[in-house]
Amino acid sequence: MLVVASPAGSVPGMAKVWIADESPLVVRGSGFHSDSTVSVVVSKTRHIYKKSATSTASGTFTARFTSSLSRQCGTTFISARDASGVLAISKIVMNDCGGMRVPPPR
Image (tube, rainbow, N blue to C red):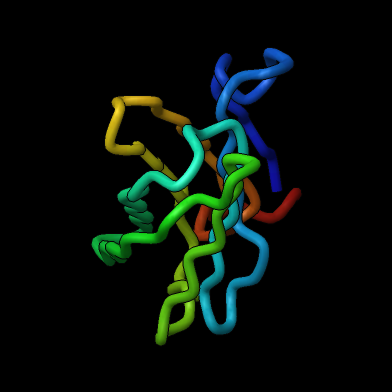
């Protein structure tokens, strides 16, 4: 699995978002305004998961979903935006899905 983080996720002091658990799906974030509503969207293989969470005084949040992340092979996109417009994006690229058939050597 190859993980690609957005530039915002790599700059100290900027908002970050990540998957903490896949079953059930849990998304965490940091660097948001305190006590703000954060809209979280996760998409993977035509499945879209949406949830709102409230950030803490320190600007972190935990969004707990009732379902698990799709087990199908595919890239996962995660975005979180607070009420003031602070945005964090993460992308997890799956590159070991198989499916590519190579003829056997002769």
